[in-house]
Image 1 (cartoon, helix red, strand yellow):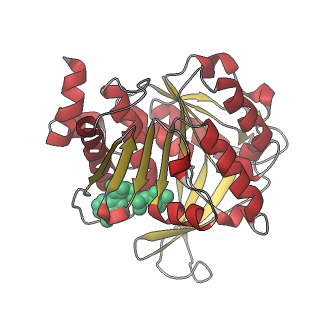
Image 2: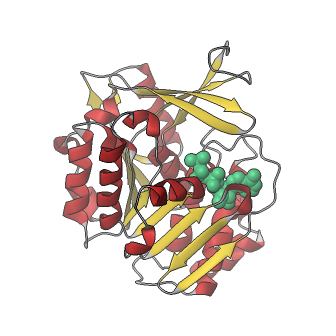
Length: 316
Ligand code: ATP
């Protein structure tokens, strides 16, 4: 089982284009990057679980129900002090912008909320940077990762949300560097890579088993050991790119799972290319539907070439 740990929240997506200030109505969707990855994995046929926290309120009920409907196992206690997280999302063209709300349940994740035995048995534990932005979730997550380092492969989607770190960017960079030292599998967007480099953090200086950079419509780059590949994007007409990075992340982990490469020290160029093609395909298809839970189900794509290369090999 692949276990994601981090925020689960309601995305309120604007129903009109233009500035958030002008928008009149929003539609309620489940979201949060680690939750999106857990759902993506489940849709791709990989057993997945989510560790998070929601409020004792109707939005918490909604999220737990939707995750359960998607086949994700939930380890999500109710917070009696704080409400479920919400985000307002505005689409300008096809690019999303976010306002993330503070003081919400997932930032209140405490060590006693987390079943360590579940994490120790996981095939991979996946996380992002959002929980680092506030306490006590920051200390809880670092504590877990430091405990698991070397025992369970750790997957990190850097997912920089500068809004959460206004005036504390140096702290954010220190936390990202600390997390990069713990991670085995790392994914980030090309904009995030440029930002980290501009601030003196170079992913080449770390020892990842797999490093992936997403390039939007240009596809992705994957590195492992001495191998490095650029994989062009799968061509589609995007409607909504919200969650494309999360869809890519889920497919990257599913690709590793199906090619039995999760525990490998290094992956060769040919296998990297297959995993990259699969991840680009899944991410591209996710942009043709609205919302963050738009990963196709395995049975819908199983006959496609990019999927057969990986999936059928694992089923032989
Ligand atoms: P997010 O904005 O969701 O946080 P991100 O910036 O990490 O994500 P992108 O690089 O925009 O993600 O996209 C992730 C992947 O989705 C790309 O590597 C690519 O495979 C696919 N993708 C994104 N945009 C397009 C597009 N216009 N056409 C085809 N594929 C796309």
